[in-house]
Structures are given as C-alpha cells and as structure tokens.
Image (cartoon, one colour):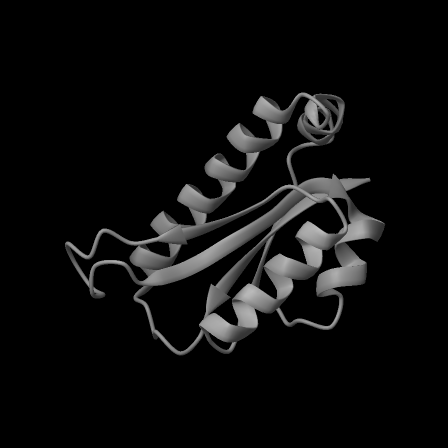
Length: 118
C-alpha cells in the first residue's frame, strides 16, 4: 500500500481553511516533483490506483518539520516544504507544512510513525 503524509506545524495555529489550502499545496507539489524525477512515476501510478491516501500529521514547529523532511530525503522519498506568500494569515516566507510521498507506507512509517494525526 502507498500513501502520502502531510506534516503541519502546530505552533502557527492556522485556521482550518488555511490548513486545507497549505496541505493541498504540499500534496500537489510533492506529486509534481515525484513525477519530474521519473524514478517515482511507477510509485505515483500505484498510489493513484489505490485511491491516493493522504494522512495529515502534526509537528510542533519548523525545526521538527525540517527534521522529518530531512529523514525522508535521507531515505530517498519524495518530499517538499511549503512556504506561504503571506497574503492572509502568516508573515511572508513562513514555512507552514511539508509532504512526504507518495511512497510505500512502510517506508513513510519509518520516518513518521510516531506522529499524531492533526
């Protein structure tokens, strides 16, 4: 089974609508990057056929977000981080969230298995 996880910073206390938008940005960006690399195309196809599972998890702050993204990069998993333009809720340049995957759920769980759902 394949999935994608999206990591959202708790410390920003984002409104639900903003969280939804930022998570969408992260999901789409990670998939676009995965498809560009070609080595992940088969994984993206399998993930899509399984229903494109996405799980939103919470991290405490930017430092913790970057820690999990780096762990995923070290495992050669698709990743991205999202930096907000700052037009509504947060200051310009604020890193709000990140995505890992799509990838095999066992690989993602090695990185994020201890995190709680948002």
